[in-house]
Length: 355
Image 1: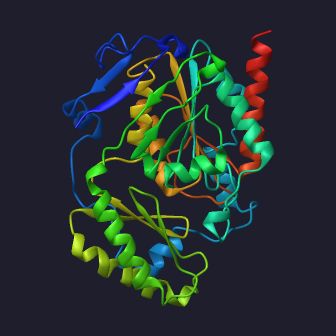
Image 2 (image 1 turned 180 degrees about the horizontal axis):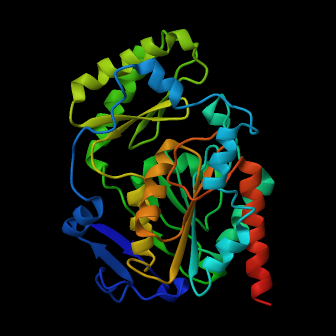
């Protein structure tokens, strides 16, 4: 398997193609070999990330109840993970001489968490803030959702979209800063799992239809079983039904958790952290000291990306949460409105620095 990266205007990102990637052909095409992909993946299979034996406790823990912001625990947590708005100047100082690259989760970050996942709409003001950010910085939305669904929500062709937890990546159809060009990055490392995912989706829809409020969402390369609208007394029943289906696909599919959602994914070692690494490499920033990645997300699945940045000692993870919880992020924001405020300040700083 190979991944093709088409870069019509490599100068767009102010970096040459990295030494770890082959040079582009005359048509601007780069092909990453299966061997290179394996290096990016860090290996194959395994069935890690399965839900704990006590399903209900684990499901409850994935969406902790909101606690007072005035508790000693929360105050201590904020000292360890201060607000990205409060520490904005520090973040800007860290970016001196570097290209900022923005990575944004969707649900709970750009849009509020809602009961019906099909109605997680972005506001016009947030869309404008994201559009302005993309004018100045390479920008990607990294979501567990189907890539096409996220694009239909956001409707900005200037962005990179990494759907299905980064297992489906496509680049912008417009050039950065409105320059001519058609930059495209396509990565689908779990393509062989598509027939299996469709099969499991149909089985789960039939299996869970007896539980009011449950919803199975097909995100193309992964599935989401939402239980936000399910009575808590039936969570265990729902989890057991999901487990019974997955027992037929042992070592091929794994179960992880998000905010009141069970995620079913292929067992390949590919997640939002791998997607972040792939995009940085594709943009020409692999092993570069001239880049500052900033990843903003609210979910457990975003921790994979936060961890990559923490281990690299490069860039910042920003967790969107009002609740104190263990995280690999450096900073925090409380809700999507603060995310929008942060993005606007970033654009204002960039515009003023160019004067």
